[in-house]
Length: 481
Image (cartoon, rainbow, N blue to C red; front, side):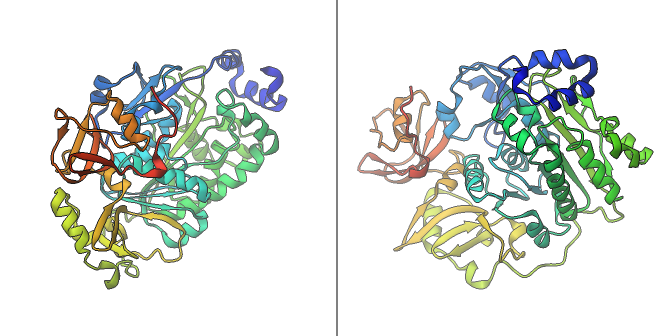
């Protein structure tokens, strides 16, 4: 493996770690760790641990994180299709866990695809506030949207924009911002050897300039008193402490915040900034020690870096009224949709009517923070929760709505045991046959199809038969179990 790593990287790591380098090297010979993070908006971590179909071990520093055995096919279980968990490397769970999101917050995940951190932020908002999840790549943003909808998130705005464009729309808007910045990926060499090739083409110098632009743009979108968490999966001081130092020098309103002191976390290394460190004040130098580094020889996870900052200002009341922007909710967009009204009444679904917006027959429920805010001109993939389509005096519900509901929020459902082979057939697009012993709340019409009470998608009961209405784009194409 040594021959595969760039000599400059090895040299840098020896300088960074000193006597710990051999332990670091030995850790790179193992296969690493797999993880699962529970969607706490659908089930408590402790409850999932009780019903988990495969062995789990707790990730000590993540309250809803678990280690998975290497052979476990967790993506091949109906619970995955129900959005009960996200498969994520344990260290990568840390940034979203360390950003202190509160209910009602306006949150931005600036580099959000494929959604590992955005889904956790959405879960912690518990359907309140607003999550803006952005990725500059539209193809990656599509995968991000799917993962958020799989998790049942509806208080979302999913965009595919350059950070400077977002900044022109959301100056001083967000309570919390997460930047999981593109980086040279040194902390992922063990998990993904292809990152080594990328490092030789675009090393720390190239990424550092990108990261400093990102953090400057994000700083302008943070409200006074708001908090910003910056993270990477690299060891490079230039990309890590160097980027934070750049912001602290450029904007004196920012201060470092203390992060949790978990066993195995390492402090920041401003002493490794070489020439750049000579330009740091003593105060900034000391603040940089409050960054957190995760090394694979100290913790059961890949390499990661985190820094939490707060924007100080005399005005810190995030609940203070703000000047209204041009209304995003014009009269024609607030049109009544009788097809939805009938559907929602029949199925017992409660959506605030003032949140409804109808566009070209497609109905959405918008988060309150978007009701009076113009986003005209932004490239977005989704605003709020897509409820479905009204056409020919009928309403066809969306997959996103199914994932946002459950047996306790909809009075029309069919519930199968997760071990029932018909569940897999349903996920593959087949229409499962019903028996007299099946648990169902109605005899005809639209219904949620559930596994152990957790929604998978829609079905339609006709003459005692269940017709499959699972979204075709999500169907499982492979044979499972």
